Every structure is written in structure tokens, then in C-alpha cells.
Length: 238
Image (tube, rainbow, N blue to C red; front, side, top):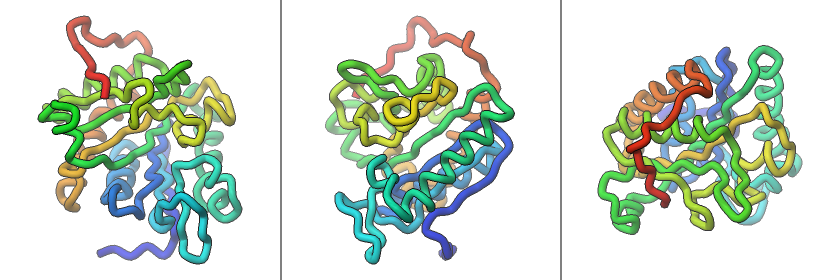
């Protein structure tokens, strides 16, 4: 196994996409760090990857415990320097050259989602801030594009996080809301993607999943806002 000396790894890219693994050190999100790394390398994007902060409700510096998907935790000393500051630097660097930036937050979800949803091939759920009121974190076409092309590329069903659900990415503390509810920036498109365990529970599966996802994001970065979801395509709300 490769050993990383740093708690948070960063990858500098050239394209306007940043892949973030907030829980890369947590067993429930196994190999999301690897997926973020491969996505950045495959699409020539940037990455901020947590490899050392173990997810916890309370911060404990000596035990390296913190929730890097909680904006409040990410504003605390050390965590801010290691995890949040690189994200800001990359965002600002990209917007000096590009009109917009896409930030993709990668998470893991249990295989149980298939039985609880009643959808046997549900492999991903995309969150973009649905709620009451909605706090959408990206342009609608981007959310639709990712869901549609990922479902085609992986021959599976991709859901959308419903208002009030666990996958909506609506909470003020959720990092997906960083550039909506904390530092509003209309040039930032953010998405949360939950990946089922069976697509990432081994290194080989995670590598394959990352390569499939990379095709979708490469196409997304090369597409403009004129793209529209096929009228007969129905996105399930999870």
C-alpha cells in the first residue's frame, strides 16, 4: 500500500475542475481518495484529498479527527490550512483563466441504497442543494449532464438527492454549499456525488469506476450550457 506523508494531498491541474475527497480517510468512504486522484490525473484537473483526518462529530487534533465535509470544521486552525485553503487557491487560480470552475465532492454510500430505494442498479446519487427553499449549487444543465452521461457510461441508474433527503447536499454545513451559503460565487458549479460501495471496495474496482467517471467529466468540461436532458429521460429522486 502506498503511504502518504501528508494528511491532505493536493494535485495541481490545468482544466477548470477540482475533485475533492472530504472523507478519504474514513472506512465508509473507502477509495474515494483514489478516485479523486485518478479523476484529476485523467481529466488534467485539480484535487484536494483528505487522507488523514478521520471523520468525527467533534474536532480532536491529536487524534486527527475532524469532518472535512463540515464547513465549520474546515474553518478551524490546521484543518483550514491543510484542506480549505488549497481549495480556495485552486478556485481562484482557475477563475483567472477560465469563466467557470466545477468542484466535485466525492463520497461513499452503502450498498443498502439499492434495496432501500427499490432500484437494483442504483450506483450513484448526485446532490446539488434541493430543499425548501432550494439552494442549488450548480447550473441545472450540469447536474442533468452528469446524471445522464454517468448512467449511460456505467449502464446503471443515477439518482438525484431529493429535498429533505440524506443526499441533497442542502445543509449549510455541507461543503457543497461553500460557494453558495458561505462565500457566494456565481462562477462556481459544485456537485456532490455518492458512489456505492460495490464500485470502490477494491483498488481495481475504484480505478475502473474512476475511469468511467472521468469520461463523463471530460465531456462535461467540453460542453456548453446549450445541452439539454432528453425529454423522455426520468431522473429518480433518492
